[in-house]
Amino acid sequence: MVRVSDDKAIILTVDFFPAIVDDPYIFGQVAAANAMSDVYAMGGEPLSALNIIGFPEGKLEIEVLELLMQGGADKVNEAGAVIVGGHTLVDSELKYGLSMVGTIHPDNIVLTAGAKPGDVIVLTKQLGTGIYSTALKKGALGEEQEKLFIDQMTALNAVAARAMVAAKAHACTDVTGFGLIGHALEMAVGSDVTLAIDFGAVPLLPQALEFASYGVLTGGGASNIEFASISVEFEGSVSREQKMVLHDPQTSGGLLIALPADKADDLVDAVRDSGAGRAAVIGEVLPQGKKPIIIRARA
Image (tube, rainbow, N blue to C red; front, side, top):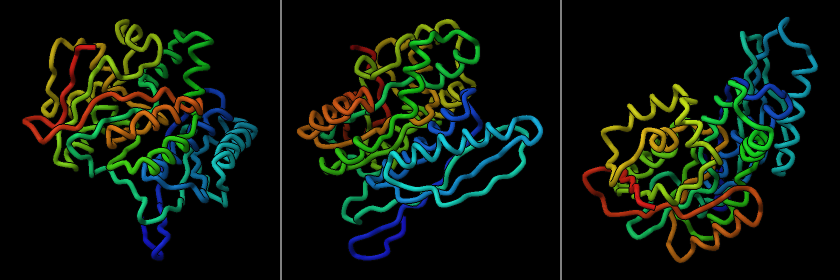
């Protein structure tokens, strides 16, 4: 973030990754929504973007590139922003993402650190996109589940961000590759607090736990568990499948927001009413304890 005047700051971010769905247009939309989440997580509004593309020349038709770029442009335009250029290079596999520029009033900036004891924690989208992605590759995802999977990943976090700023939220991060616990850990450590999460309140994609029980898991989820293991206290019995969902790497995931308890219902209602996520209050912020994260297994 760069402050350029008393009433304006610029947010600069970049994110890109390999294709997670076969349809290049949908992949373009997912990647664009994911890249803009870094702007929304600070409370900002996307302004412009540059494409970053790795294209396997000779392996894919040029129409794939055209559809990919159209998907990204349509999603960026939906956010009220514009793609102004970019760079493409030859790569071994298709990759896409964007370098984003966003704007924000300096008084409205929400950082990862800043959560306060007494706050509640809101998650604005369901968990399980990493597990669903693996299930899709294995041919185990039904048509209705695939639609839900795509709809969630392409949904912008714009409404959640605006509601968060209006609620004077104390801290926020988007939930992506490190999973819910990994990103919650970043917030807890940066804020010198403990985050207590009630597993029964966490919104999950339908059958995410069932897929996990069948062994439809991601390598990234296993790495996330190992990384965060010394920082998490479990109250009650938490199954292997539940742990995998909590650590599941998300693509274009929701926002994890710490805010005053009396503001949470308005934020949750705004997100749900917009259709952009299944927001829910999933826990609370406590004074710093022995572990930065507590997972409560009771519903």
